[in-house]
Amino acid sequence: MTTLHLVRHGQSEWNLAGRLQGQAPGIPLTGLGHEQAAAAALSLDGVPAVALYSSDLLRARQTASPVAERLGLPVRVDARLREQGHGQLEGFPTRQLLEAAPYDFADPDAHAPGGESTRDVHRRMAAVLTDCLERHRGRHVVLVGHGDAIRAGLAWLNGHPADRIPWLTVPNGSVHVFRTGPE
Image 1 (cartoon, one colour):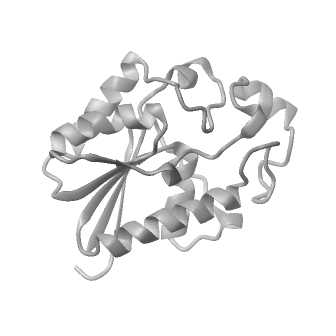
Image 2 (tube, rainbow, N blue to C red):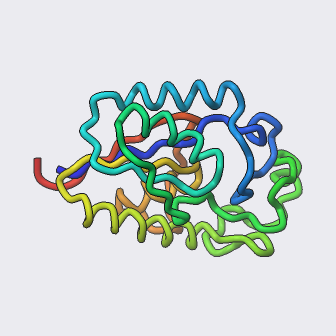
């Protein structure tokens, strides 16, 4: 059986400020975010993981660091694990954007200027997860990423197309486990 452990990064400074992060690269974790990363690492203690992948964005790499230390694995950075790109909207207050609704967030093909659609993220996550499942068949793998990317990845893993991604709460520092294949 192949087991994927998908970890969302800990709270970042922009999570705390309520700003849309997307693929903004240099946003660090808060103190609480570092605690959440340590807790995620502790929850993975004893998992016989053979590989640890992380988004290249700072908040994910900072979360992957205590996981790597706990599991004794190097961090393999993979930009395909990035959050959904929101282009020109990144950095704006999330509440303001939701109220102004600059595009139909429910449309899987809609996107902000310079950003990605939900379908794009679904496709990107399908590619990275397919690679992991093939490369590490029958083993445990840890992937550190972002809320919307994890949501899209779990949808793909569970057979949901991009236009039917179920809503799933993905809290900062959470670990979501997906198993597939024969036991």
